[in-house]
Length: 273
Length: 271
Image (cartoon, rainbow over all chains, first blue to last red):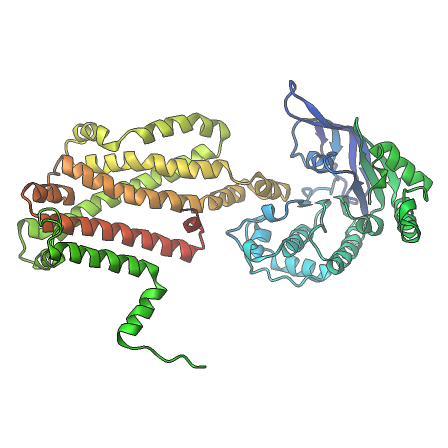
């Protein structure tokens, strides 16, 4: 895989461009393809959701974009924030395993910085206010619930003021109220700060309310297709309504385009939800 | 309802009930007294607790000579054991971190460390005696030889199993290499404590055994003293030596646990 050098443009962060990206597990001898020829672009201020069944390679796709998965081919051009280095943040799927047990949440946030260990209190407080989080950062990870750690992971990412935000099921452990509030705040921040954001999402509410576009990934051989967020929203809304009216008839016929893509890409897994 | 304060024997029993460790110690001492005082076990095999206490009383006399200087002998042994232990912990932690940080090095070194761990330190003691001209360094070296593999194996394994997820998060956020190294080392601190605690009791065992094989030049050695006392059927001194080693091992382990608790390290849960 080649990662293009960042341009020197001062004015804009620039898009994330993924071209013909393929990844596999194992060695050349015992190779198992995860996904092949994935191409998409994410513009600044845009959130692209990745949706698909378990094991289809969504997390591997994110890891490949971040340069953490080696066996791959294709091109990834990262956003270019100008003369300063690119700031990347991740909200990992295994949020508990992303915090050091010997450190408080505050120190954990401080460690995840490019310029030293001391937590940037001003940035953390600003991000905490923006997200509306009431989180005691003096706690150790062992003293926190999964939901609190996921909130801390979101806070860690936003306090970093990233140009590129990569999130893997960022709301999976949160209660409905907090999840609704955070996805709204996250949406606002991405738009306001012109971040480039890619998020793997399983819950339809987040896809509908957060994403500008949805990329459906899955099927065998693996393939992807993109759909406008509004179309996805309409599909899920209609589907929910039809399920309310007649549970037996909730098969996705209500919205042709997205349902068709779901069926085509996921190969019969279009009844997700 | 307010609890009525207990007095006398009832208070003692209540205190015992709250500390199972104390019950164990009191039971052993009671059993010892019973076996010694009733004559069920001969005096050459089991010293009377009173006689052992008298050995300690004589040892506290500044003018004590010979076997009565048991506390001075204990100082020599503990000094050698501590020196060997410190050397082993230093080398073991450095080696474990260095080797565990690289998968290739860790895989390559593990068989060697396992091989060294299988060798009884007492077998290499004569070599150390010759190498260090029969000085105290031979004892310290033998103790370190026995303890380094234990510490190195514990720390090396922990280092090689530092969660990649945590390190990847730091990498994505752009944390500098020194911060990532610091975080990785902090991850293995509990294993350092674990290795150090295992090595502590081992160092004491090796110190006593080597002294029993060969008396140090200074002549101050608990192992040599216990062996001499055993040869001349001076059982109270043998038991006093046993008690000193046991109490030191217990106290050192307790001290390590306190240190772990103060530092918030959870190595205690692993042993």
